[in-house]
Length: 451
Image (cartoon, rainbow, N blue to C red; front, side):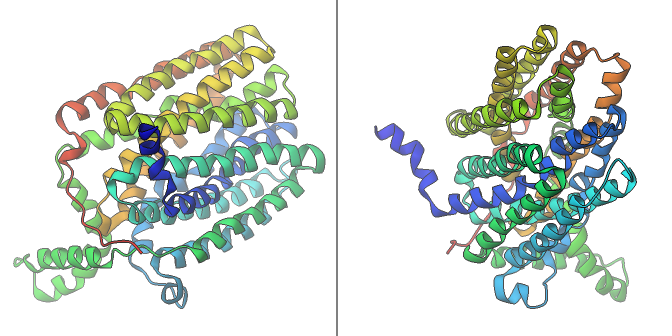
């Protein structure tokens, strides 16, 4: 009983509820521009290759670090003064996201596919920017020892918003009312995130930012080989735009860290992009996909998230990453079994449950790892940089998933075997990090007590 109370205690902090609801807002747009969108496009006759290319519209998730420094340093008129730096930006972006989703709902892909692509790009830009705010808020509002529990709650929220409401709920709505009305109703769900931000505390890390900025200004002032006027001009540019990334490159093993983040989840990216198309090609209906892939899959994912939080606490972040990464690659093979079995409901459920369980494990460990790498003075910039690097590989690589299936003449079994092999590529790099660059080598962070 005492051991159980020890595991539950971190989740009783009220900040965990905030992270759950913000995770909901973060996850909601994902199926509307990925999995559900693929089904919508396939339903109106768009080819698998064109559906795969729609993954490129998710590029903002891979490059949002480029504008993350703006959210770290720029104050918004009235909103920042009223709600603070993080919440002010969050409220603005979420209001625009509602507008973007409503515009996407009006698209008619069978008539103008390019217009839909632009609408999807607008949604992904705002969704990626919302992620900057929410990720930074999570890192800043928690103590380092809470990152495992905080990551678990964020992932829970993400899948409640993305998998249950956005994906499964979206499929149910589309089956009964059509795609356009489904998207319009789901756009209003973003209001949950806005209400959460209004009622939540603002992280207090201003002193950390001031101290770090003073150090960086002193660094530029020490460049005596430059004329004073040039140094005065460069100081704000360096402090606000360059320093977040320069600070990271001064750490031991930073190139190994970036290489690992880049390739770790490539196999999952390929599988995830084509999963719904695969289900449809096997002959499963929208309702069957919603029941198994979304509802059962969500339950397995949430269980995996809980187990992932426990695993991180018990063995540490890096060991948890290794164990969960190996398990994820193994469960990719269950989709090959489904391809061999055909339209088997039992194998369908088994594959989906196994894949989602291990995905929950690995996602919690990965998010906790990225959080542990951030300096609080540059939370938005550094987390966005690290997350963007992982997204860059997954988004660009997954764009070839439809082409790969077509080149294999629709041989799904071989395709999923390849995804399992690709999923193993990051484990040798992870071993190097575990052996030579453990998390403890990263710089300590100092934070003020949260309200």
